[in-house]
Structure formats: structure tokens, C-alpha cells
Length: 429
Ligand code: F6P
Image (cartoon, rainbow, N blue to C red):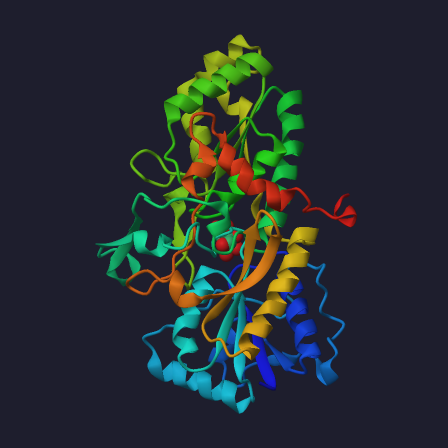
């Protein structure tokens, strides 16, 4: 292979430029040209395939800065439709005309789904990214646990349900232990939680902090590093009575409470609290808003004004309970050391996989208690369920203790290898 393409797709993360950097550095060593395709899959729909040569004379262009968040070649949530065969043929011929012999996509589960029909036309490899930690498998047979239910309202006429697992779980069998972008998102969220605590303390307030992750509680789980009093994750339906009791207990004790909630938390009917204003993006992903606000309204109603008046904390529950979203700050800015380092390695691995002749492969970050983290390759077909669909990974439910509303022992064991040495000296303020 003499020339390959690279594109970044889906929501940005702090570590995408680091992945591009790792890929280009490795390509330079292997004397392969790299063309960066502008704006994700969108570039492939444009007959001119907007692109930039990232390593003229096998030297990376100076604009590739692995310490900068976002993606220098742009991203979009455009989607390759497997049904549009003519469009796919057109894409393949456009890439061929550019002399591109293999394609690396830096993306998550949506990108990997988009890559499936393209992999039938040219060699492709995915280098993972997503702050949600959603590209991966908690255990190798996880795709077999999905069931499909007819649903005329869902995209494609079906929705998917994840059945209870019978798997014997082992941290070392996780496929793609962690995705670049996750560590930085957790670092920022945990920092936000710590900062909000001081306002909650000073003003005797209850803070509800919403973090991203869609239907996955991994970011919420990691926010434990910011020492919130309770964490709520989408994988465990909300037990409102239990939560309110706990909030009152804590308020009695310390006169402030800090709660973290994942944006995708659900009630005991499985309804998303933040789904009141739900919309979908072009790839069909649900955009959630307002889980924290919805929870605040429930608290106002259940705890009531009188409770706060007794504590001489103003006149109303409305004043005492506030919400904040960490929002896109958890997705932007400088990647921390863990993300920079492994994102670059995964970019390099993606190049190697292509050159070794793999097709429809995924560069993964594996964990072994003896050798630590190492990069590997995994066949993308093994991520597919029996209907061919690749699902976003959700947090492994046992990582969370629903009674304590905190990471469980095994959840802590999961987080430790990532965060024990994740931050470089120059990452701190
Ligand atoms: O998938 C990454 C993610 O940041 C989710 O955690 C979040 O729900 C979504 O993207 C937000 O998307 P957008 O930036 O398009 O609003």
C-alpha cells in the first residue's frame, strides 16, 4: 500500500488529533502517504473528496498537534447508508481515483456500522474514539445477547434489547478496555464535580450535575474521582424513593449534596428522564437533554419547601436545588496523557493492520494485569449482532452498586488501571 486515507467521524473528542498524529508518524516510518479526508464521511459524498496531504515527503505537516482537542480534519455525523449501493460504488471509485488503497476511520460504534459496507469495497480499519467509552465489548460474546423487537416507530422498524448476561466476566477479556477520549472526559467531569461542591457547601445547596455518555454510564462512573455523594447511571433504573431518602440523610449530615447523573438515566418503566425534548442526528443517534432538570423537578416535588425552611435554607426547594451540565467542556480541549499516548498508539496500530492486509479490522486497547495496556487488532465482524448491527457498549452493570449509588468493588478495579497514571505533569492547571 502506497497511499491511505484517514477520516475522523462522529462527535469530536480531545484525542482525535493524537490518533491522526500516531497514524502519520507510523506511516512515515513505513513510507506510506496519508491523505486526511475533510469532515468525516461527508468528504466521500463530495465528488472532489476534499482532502489534505498529511505527510508530504513522509514528514508530518506541522498542523498535526497531538495535544490539541477536536480534529484538525473536521468531523461530521454523516452516515454511509448500506442500502445505497450505487452511492457506495461511487465512493469506492472516488477513493480509487485519488490512489487511496486503504481507509482508516477514527470513530465509534456509529462509524464502525458505517464502515461495514465500505469494507466490501476497499480495506478499512477503525481506530476507536469516543468519550462515551462505547466502542468495545465488555466480554467477547456480548453481541449475541442483543434481541430485536418489532417497533414501527423505531428507525428500521425494530428496537434492540440487551438481555441479562450469563457471561463469566473478567476485566482482561474486555475487548477494547477503554477508548481514547474517555479518560479526558472523566478528568474534566470529575474536576467539575469537585468545583461545584464548593458552591453547594457555601450555599447549602443540592447540586445535580449531568454528564454525557448517552445510554452508557461509563463517564458518570468515572466522575467518582470528583467525590460526588451519589452517582446515577442509565444501566440501573432510578429508584427515586431510595435516592430521596439518601439525599435527605446526607443533607441532614452535611447540609449539601452533590449528585452526578448520566444524561441517559431511566425511570423504573425504562423511560429516559431527559428524553422530553429528544431529537435525532443524521446517523439516528438520540440527542438527550435535561435528565438533571427532570430530576430536579422530582426533588422539588418530593422534598418540598418546608424541608429547606426547617434548615433555614431559603424559602423554597427551587432555590436550594440546582443543576449544571458539564456539557461539551468534557469533550473538548487538551487530551490528558493517557489519551494522548494510547490514541497515538492506536492510530499507529491502525496503519499496521492495514499494511498487514487486514480488512474490516479494529485497533483495540487491551489490558492485562501483568503487562498493562497494549494495542491489538480485532475483527469488526465480531462486534456485530446476529442481524449485523454494531451496538454502542454500555457500562458493565456490575461496575455499579445501586444501593450505595457509587462504583462497586469491580467498578473501582476497572477504573484503577486507567486513572492510576493518567495525568501528565503538564495536564494540571
Ligand atoms: O457520543 C458522544 C456524545 O458526546 C454523547 O455523550 C452526547 O450525547 C452526544 O455526543 C452529544 O452530541 P452533539 O455534540 O452532537 O450534541
